Length: 369
Image (tube, rainbow, N blue to C red; front, side):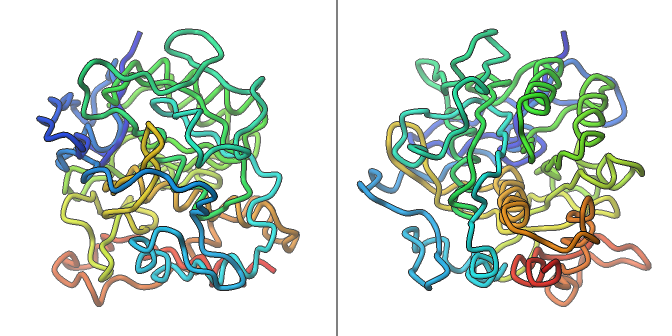
């Protein structure tokens, strides 16, 4: 059995604890070696805790989204990030807001009772806990664990982008954001065979054929798979995210990886980059739900990844030109905005360290209609 870890920040990620936690010890994985373990992006990276404190309890009736009518996001903290990707424009172009689209979150599970998810989950018959081999993918905290809540936070970001999408919760990691690569692969397979149209994988591991094969099987079905670039502050995108750029065929066509930027368009200090980075999105201090009915600020490529997932859900929830069938990832890349002017120090010689730049959700939705 092979272990893995969630990408709270994508390479050696430790969650930002709301309770003065000591960062968990990251699992060191040689990038070229077969690995039994996987971690969430943050636990495998250099970010430290991924949650910067709990902000408040969830307010009854709270809507975590900008709306086509211009109503401000309930999370005022996120407005600079969403303005950066032109989310208001994207949602206006996609008034179904992801209706009918199922996005699987293969992660640490989610808080199924959180008000943010009521009416926003897939049919319970599609839920899965791969770790415990049952149908209850709830977040399962230990007595003290700083990583608790990673999957809940990831799912919450998706619903801010595509409020009418449905989240399919698949628990494949333990509360500390780690686990077996074989479990993560099984989680991807489960999602692909139970109706997911987008699969979010905010995790990293060493090179592993079981996980690669699961992602290949999913993309061969025309399912989009989004993955974190990692949080090691290196010019090498973590595995499996880099496969999205390395591979041709269905995997290259339907898989994507995400780096993270600050509100000023500079690359987050811990985000991975390099010639295998595909696209970046906001991933610093993103307000999002946390277990127990509250919310907090999360950072990491684990949280820029669901921005791509939500944007894909917006597109899949609308009629779009037939020419773009199977080409949404490529078109999202083509409509990205240039990050070079804000990150000159990263550009050395002919190297393109930031791929297609910054996600422009508004330009992307406009281009496919």
